[in-house]
Length: 555
Image 1 (cartoon, rainbow, N blue to C red):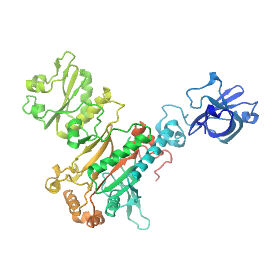
Image 2 (cartoon, rainbow, N blue to C red):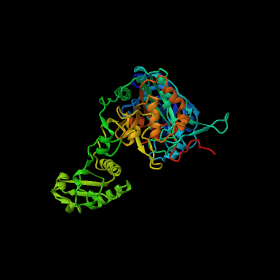
Image 3 (cartoon, rainbow, N blue to C red):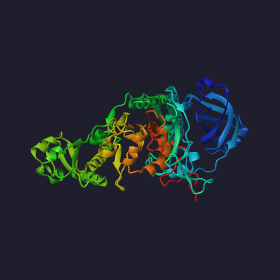
Image 4 (cartoon, helix red, strand yellow):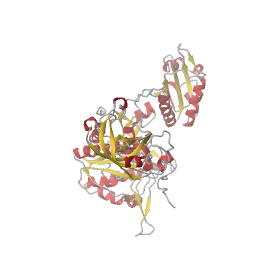
C-alpha cells in the first residue's frame, strides 16, 4: 500500500495502485504522488528506466487511477520529506498502467473553502479528501467499539421493522403508500420505541441495535431526515443501571480512538437546577458564568420592571461592557424574546455605572455586588423567558469572551424532567419526550390530578452543551399508561386505535424496563471535531431536504 513503504523496504519490488494526487515534470524525470487510503508514495518515472511509462506519464493528470510496479529506493538526503510518513523512500517505476482517467475536476482535493453544495454534488470526489476519509473511518471505528461494548455487556442485537404504524415521537412521520392496500400507509419508524418495549415483554432482557430512523423535521447542523442511533433497552433495571451502560459505551468509544476516556461516573444535574443555573436543558459546563436568581430580593424594589416581573435573573460577566457593547447585547436579548436588558457596570475602579442604580435599594445593590471589571446583566420577565434569554446570552458570552475550555470534555446527565408540558396550540397537556416515560416514584398520583408538577424518570446525556441522546425508565403497567393518555386528552377509543396492541402486551406480564437512544451522528461529529453531522455522513441531505448528488426527491 502507498502509505506503508519505509526504509526497511529499500531494494524490494512493489506494486501499487491508487489515485494521482500531484504530478511534477522536471524536464525528463516525472514525479507523481500516488495516493491510496493508507497515504502517499512518491513515484519517479525515468525515461531511461521505463521508456513506455515515461511516454504515458505525459498524459497523467490529477485523480487518474494508476497501477505501477517498481523498486523501492532511498531518497537522497536533500530530498527526504519529513512531512510524509513515506518521505524517506520513493518508487523507481519499471511498469506503469493508466487504469482509469478523469475528466477535469470541479475542485481540487486540497482546495480550501470549496462551497458545500459543490462538494455534495460531487460527493464521490469529496469522499477522497483527507477530511472525509478520516471522518468516515473514525465513524466505523466508533461503531465497531460500540458493538463490542454492547456484546461484552450481554446485549443481544435484534433488528426491528422500519415500516410501522405512526407513533407520537415529537416529529412528523414519513409515510409510505401500500400498493397491496390502496389508501393505506406505513410510517417510517421515528425510533424502535414500542418494538423494543415489546422485546422486553417477550423475555429479551438486554436488547440493542444500530438503528436507522426517519423524522420529517427541519434540517440543521445536528439533524438529518434519516439518522442512526444506538438503541438499547434493559429489563428490571434501575436508572443507574442504564446510565452505567451508556457511560461504558462512551468510554469504549474514546479508547477505540486512542483517547483518554472521560472520568466516570458522569456528574448529574436535575432539570430544574439546570434551567435555574444555566437556562438550558443541555448546558455547556466547560465554563462557569452561572445564572443567579434575584426574584425574592426585588419583590419590593422601587424599580418597577423588577418588582412587577414574575422572575428576575441575572449573569455576572467578567468584563465592563461599553455602551455600544451593551446595545448589541440588548439587541441579542430581544432576538431571544426579552423586552429589554438591564445592567450594572462595575468599572476597573469599582464604580457602578447604570441608569437603574438610582432605583435600587442598598440591599439590592449589595446583593448584586460584582468584582471590579464586571457587568451584571438582568432579565425580568416570565420564568421561561428569563431562562431562555439568559441561557442564550450565557452561551454567546462564553464563546465571545473565550471562557470555554475547548480542551475539556464535559459529560453529564440531566435527570428528573417534567412529565408533561402544555401545548401552545391546543392548550392541552402533552408529553415532554414521549408518552411511554414512567413518572418519578410517587408522582403517579399527579398524572391526572396535577400534571404540571409531575416529574419523570427521563434522562439526557449531554456533552459540551450537545444533547447526545435521551432515555427513560418506561411505564410497564397498562393502567398507568392509560392514565398518561387520559391526561393528554386522549380518549379510550383513540388510545386503543393507536396503541391497542401495546396496551394489551402490557397486561401480559410486562417487566419493569428502561433504555436509551444515543444519536450516533451527533456523537461521532463531536468525536471528529466537526461542526455538523454532514461531515461524518457519507451522503447527507442539505437544509432544503434535497440530495445534491442524486437530485432527489423527484416528482
